Length: 465
Image (cartoon, rainbow, N blue to C red; front, top):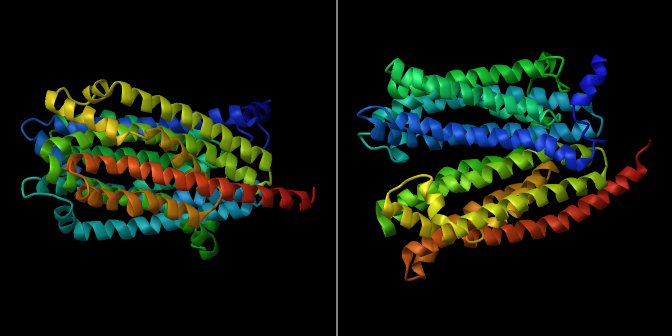
């Protein structure tokens, strides 16, 4: 009886109807991304409310974001590269290979976290100055980063290994990893910041404790009997034959996250030059709105990844096509809906973040430009993540580089040289890059996916029953 209930609860990636299965796996991952987004916003609000020094403290914390983003990017390099490889191995019936992949990626994450901790502690001050810390904000940045960096191993464990839980079809358990850390952090923040009077250091301590609990949750689950993939001591070693393909596949999400800080700096410098503080303030809101679109789309793609990866490994082209089709339909409905709201009611969207009339007017004007083709995020995100799920490391890496590094950053710098309205030109770089990147990604996927389906069908026909 117990076994029957357990089977009823767990997702069968190879036999459950794809549509309901996608909804079942994607809802928790979407919720996890939304909760993570809200957690970041609430964290900033708390720090901004510190009596007498909130503004400087918030700015100081802001210049630490490139370091925080880089730590997350390295977690994605290993975790988001290794988990699809594990899913493909599971689909192919190579369970031991999947567990060895988990062990290798765990060892790599823990070793890399130690290296990053030492490097950031040694070079944090020059890095923070490089990222824009002033003499007034540098002490707050150092207070926060000194403590946050000590929790690097917890961040990388929670973020990097959580994908191996989703890879098993257990996205509900993976969602709990994010929920546990986010809720705990929201509760602990006011306690350490205000009740204990620790200010920025209190925020960092609350964050590290929350991340440690999330990391412990992930490790305990992957080591237990409820996990299909088990974290075993015998497999906790670096195996280059498994690690290198994982890193190659994880290079795409790594580049996407690591280049985010460079993109932010490029935007802010250009906007400050042509529009001043008001334009930079508007960009802060635009980035927040963009994250509100991208995070749910990323959660949807993460929910779809195990289905596509598993059935690719299992040689089921019919289920692969269904997975891509359903994911794209849901992504389009969501992206077009948000795009419609932004275009029809930009002032209402801007007022969600601020009530200053000048800033709202500037943001509303910029929103319509910035999100002119915002619906293309559905195609860009879905197809790029599908390449990751299919193990197409080179293509996914190129697409990650194309939008931000090859297109967007150069356009931010070049377009103002050819347009009379310089500020409009900077904001216009986003839709131009979005359109070109989505067109390239869609074209590549349609050609490559058709070829992959033919190969998969041929292999499935020759595979012994």
